[in-house]
Length: 454
Image: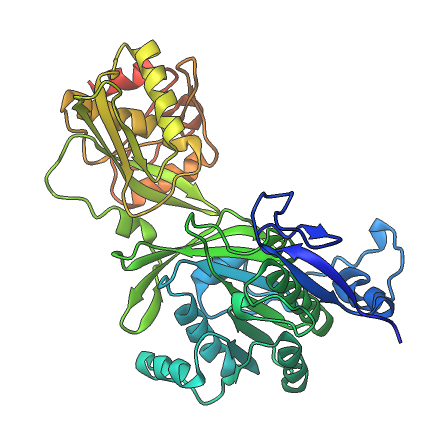
């Protein structure tokens, strides 16, 4: 009989050591190294060998690989299907994270109750009792007659029962409380999370069961646990939303079956999570009074345009080092745009406090907001309101040129649908055919944009 082996693993960074020591030499943390019991050496190859644990692998040429499309099934939420790349793929491992109270368990419970009406579905809860989950389902008015429930934290027991139930989809809530008997560290540690996620991922692929794991986040908003957790799963999405806002955004960070820049919008209501079919209408709830420093830009999120209002406030600073505060945008980008405006437009704000906010909690991750940000700053600096029917987008270069952005025609058409009459865009993004009801001004330099406002 093979002898069990032991290893010593750091609970913070996951580094392995031959013997115990007080301080981890990789991350510098003290008293984080714990003993981990490994399985027999003879079983190691069968447990970890091959893709998804398969051992009967063979070498194929690339042209011999089957290119048949992977069948998908809908989650019941179009916004969730959009972020997942078109639906749920059987045998995939999905990780959904979010801050406490964001609505992860509520969204998944709604989805699972709907999918249980179409086929076998299993919901595994490790943080709540079955009574608590049932009370939430009854409060939301969900159909509870066919959803299979399990309260368990042992991964081996969960997979053994899932083999008997044969569900089409299984939810694990949450991966941080799951544990494996052969690992001696506490649930939530690096080794427990890593091994539990790897075991569930192999089980999903071997039995063609879609597994959705709920993950916690740290103080800085990143997923808790080892980084290998995000490497072993197929799709990683994050549900985000402020505690004082009823709207939640679902964004993909990794997706092996689709794009990673898709955005889904939900609203938290008394009946659970509701889809928002037209997010632009939410983010454009502007005041009737025209104020300076406010302008509308068009972002491109995945496969659709999104109209968002951006606000800027420029005020005289009593400090030696004026403040540069941004919400929803990168602060270094604002500092660069201010330098470009000073150099190529002659407007200096070195003695001014600058505040920039993207309305609605959206985080801007593309450069198409550069021109709109600068015009909002100029509007606030001069205390001159911009036309309420004006929409702006474009990238600003360091030499003051206005660069084109992708999907310019689709952005303009979306703005025209919402009633915008004027647009300032890069010359290369000007439409070849006029858009009915919209006057488009193409510019090539930053100075031309300021002249267009006058």
